[in-house]
Length: 77
Image (cartoon, rainbow, N blue to C red):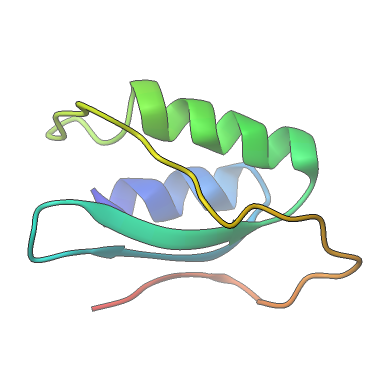
């Protein structure tokens, strides 16, 4: 799912990273305009990659920042 997450993040003009876990979940961090972050959260919750099976989406540690702390959108391994 991470390749599709990265593609969607870039499409939305976001920065951050995503990573598949050994437990079959995806973790990551996303930064950008609030409305685009919200759109990414909806995409992650409802659509995801074509091969994903989404049973639950959880978003934690959300906060407002004054400037981006990351650059680009990466897939971590």
